[in-house]
Amino acid sequence: MENTFSFSGYELPVGMSKLIWNFVPVSIESLSSSHELQSIMHISLPLQLYGAAVLGLLSHLCVFIRGEWHMQAPTILILYSILSLLIFLAEIRYGASDVVSSLSKTLLLASSYSTALFTSMVIYRKYFHRLRHFPGPWLAGATKFWHVYQCRDGRNHLLLERLRQQYGPIIRTGPEELTIIDPEMPGAVDGPGNNCSKAIWYDFLLPEIALNTTRSKRDHDTRRRIWDRGFSAKALAYYEERVVEYAETLEARIAELSRRGEPVDVSQWFYWFTFDVMGEFAFAKSFGMLRDEKWHIAVVMLRKAMRLLGPLSPVPWLAQIGFYIAPWMWVVRDWLAMLVWCRERMGERIQMTAAKPDVSHWLIEASRKRNSLEKDREWLNGDAVTIIIAGSPAAGLTLTDGRYIPGGTTIVAPRYSLARLESCYEMPTCFVPERWYSRPEMVRDRRGFAPFALGRYSCVGKALAMSELRFVTALLVSRYDIGFAKGEDGTSVLRELRDQFTAAPGALNLSFQRRGLDGQTG
Ligand code: HEM
Image 1: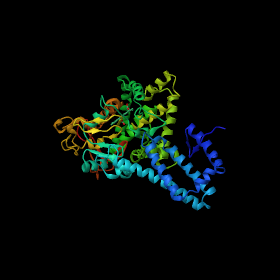
Image 2: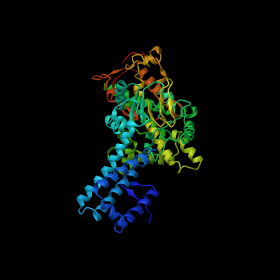
Image 3: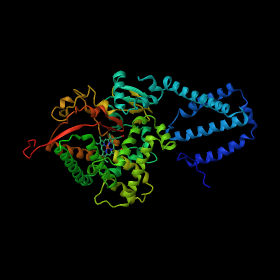
Image 4: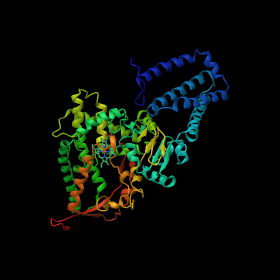
């Protein structure tokens, strides 16, 4: 019989499952014969609690203080649960006589261990850590749970903006994390010559892996070369034909609504447009939302799942526990269902021959040529997720004014705040599109403007995204007079904005008045 260990659908790594498979019966067996164990059970309770506390302290100082543990979080949780169960069984057998006292003693030992472990972590983070001198909320430097709690409503962008006003441009937003709101950051972190790598947060897609989530520079560069082929001038010409078709469908829908005098929630319609286009490029199959005028179930799942990425992104270890130990839970279920959906569509896409090349065509063909289609499935599945939803330094970083950011720090450079810096823009909180063409003096420092990121990790789809933006804008602006619909004041689009890896804007109801051929509104 094969020795695997599965808990709530979570399959432990083979080595670990063998260890547990052998360890549990051997341990229970040894409970009934070990004299040493009997003598341990009869040590006085204070001494046992003291021993558990020392173990907690040592686990921090000798083990958890180094390296990354988020991917092992489910295994660690399962091992601790098994250990507690063994202590409980040993207590019943040799220690306290009844179940209730055995249980309370086990809980006491576990609490003593964890109190020492977490106290040691907090003391270290607050008084010895290399980031201890950076300003920020006291609790943020002690635990990332502070951040999870603060951005539970998906408004991390507003939280960071408030912190900037309170603490200045460099804020300690986590035990190992600095949020730096300085126009220099996009270039310093992502620009040429930097030595930064991706933060642990990017492991959220594992075991699937994608171009924008891989943390290995070598894997990224190899994969990026394949993606680049999918965005050559020739490939872009194929895509643009289809972008035009979808943009015209969008315009036809808007024309219908405008004829009926109905408001157009452009946030929703633009969402449907971009997702239909991306479905076509990822799976050679549109989501059909523009056609059906309703949300596709997979996109609904994706939107729900993206809510997980906002609040849980500061604690990737908790997300891993959710994925493996509680896959049935709330948004975790939506996230996993969305991954399964993408996996299945990618399976179908591999089997079909698309009439015209889509983005996936280049990725699949590259695997086919190398005869590694099956081996590359995790990449293909992960990249499919990237298409549809489409830094930390080991070494330190010195900013141009001499400020030093210690190595091993996760650096966050929030675009929302960068776009609102007085030092970069005149009237930074006002919507003045002219600043980007006829009034360049309104842009004081453009280094912070990097919506497609910079350097090796910059957006590979930038040319496609820009052609979608240009085409739809030109089409609508040339045919319609556009204004706020009745009852709309333009505030909810930002007020309801949610920060969840990509930004999810609130509703924006506009009225579209068709102009006649002479340019007059008709
Ligand atoms: C207005 C639309 C878009 C914006 C603002 C945007 C922005 C970005 C940003 C900021 C990144 C860096 C993300 C990170 O490092 O975590 C990125 C990466 C990426 N984007 Fe886009 N993107 C857009 C549209 C697209 C489109 C249409 C595609 C096409 C499939 C695409 C594909 C990608 C891919 C594959 C990456 C990963 C690149 C790499 O790691 O080498 N994006 N994008």
